Image 1 (cartoon, rainbow, N blue to C red):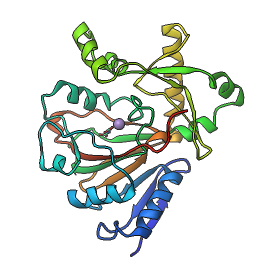
Image 2: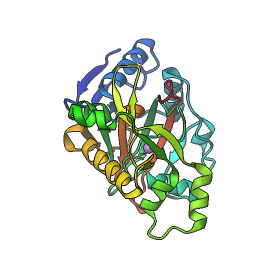
Image 3: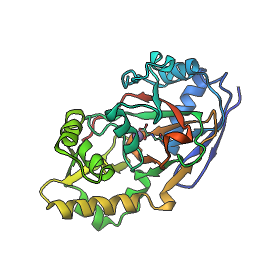
Length: 280
Ligand code: OGA
Ligand code: MN
């Protein structure tokens, strides 16, 4: 077995060079989990894993979170794999997938957001559809101490309608009801000190309001923080090729897709590792 790890930028990302035949070995699993903590985004260029191996690899890395069977009931979903593609007509699923085009953290509806998300490229988009990652850890570390103190005790509301109103020009009461049903307002601290000793911010598209601040003022602060955290020095943008696999440390990052449409053909297969650390 050989595995090479090459850092991509000083703050984020590493290329992982290993064969799909070797990924279930315990030594590889150990080094992948270690690298995930250290580099936060792991790119396995053109590793070409079968769905079966992908499901086994995910299970070897930790307990997986079943996102539910995708409505197309594809073969992949039988293996616990979620299919990300725009060729469907389920409104909730389309809203989720289109909502991915805004910087966000996964699973902010839960007390324990997922530990990691895995994305495998089945069909690369003919146009658009890159995925961006931004290190919240690096962005927090670089904030001036005084700014950190100002943010420390703030609380933030996360909810699906916060994403919806960015996507829709004129959302109806029905749209809001649909969004509230899947992801009602959930309160979190703005600043998340994690057991690793690193700190991230609970910001991104699902963050709609700062508790106790006027709506416009709170949203302006949230926008400013997302802009700070997604500055080029904290980010890595991945252009997909068929067979690529990316694993990212969800609580460490904001991530997003760049816009693409159904005609681009883009299909990704996704698995999710359950969170291991409650927000506190
Ligand atoms: C997700 C997500 C990004 C992408 O599945 O949560 O943000 O590029 N995906 O598809
Ligand atoms: Mn996401």
